[in-house]
Image (tube, rainbow, N blue to C red; front, side, top):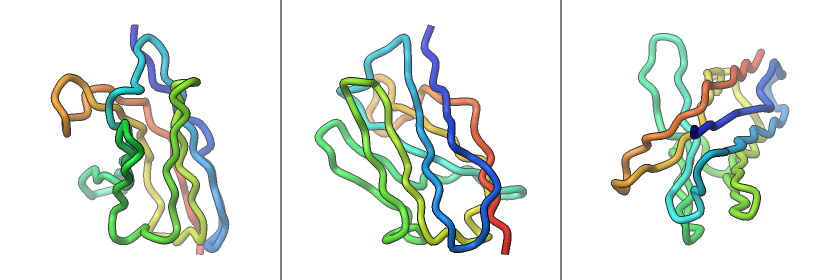
Length: 118
């Protein structure tokens, strides 16, 4: 059974930093892209950052310069280091991994809440 488990969410103040971690089990994701999505109340889920199997990274425009995604293939984990957090970063953050088709995220964690107070 494939499981993705997020950790590291919480309540922080604007300007603070937070590190989210995703631990995967049941499948090796070293050969596919993995990423982090978020969904704020009343908004669609959006891709925040992704990292390919070769290390190429994508960042959503509003988080560039403030967020870094990394992965550890040996441990089957990936992280999202967030700094200079803003109230608009408040959302449920989900880690995800591609399946058979590139660009399609078939595996999802349960989500972790990040709340940034002003």
